[in-house]
Length: 152
Image (cartoon, rainbow, N blue to C red; front, side, top):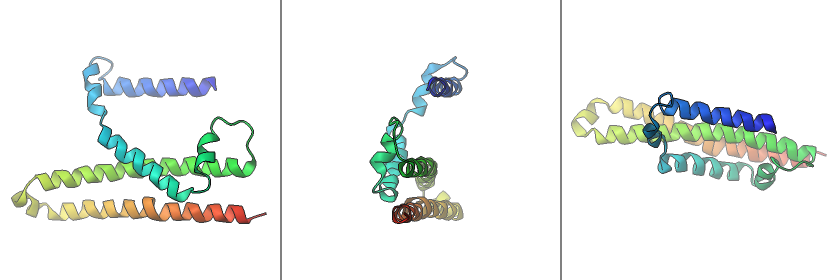
């Protein structure tokens, strides 16, 4: 447990070190705090996990601090946290693509016509991420859970 806390502290230090330009300008930290961006990632991730892990969402979260859990719950919790990683990364990409689409739209009609192929390319990535990570992967997780429950 002590190594986990040490690892978290080192990780936080590394992030603050990089975001503050080598600990010389702590004013730059505010550029990395954006509630809308955090909400996109957090809400999409939790929503997708709720879809894919309907019967084991709470037990997967609480398994972090419970000491006595059965093997099936432990296996499902491991799947849950691996999926959480995938969904958080995908949600970050989705947020990035959303921002790029908004930037392209803000450029106006004249320039917009010139970069229309770029906007189509960005939107195809956007749709692919949404379908792959927010629809298809949760369905697969749900079916895997059913399979695990059906096995003796």
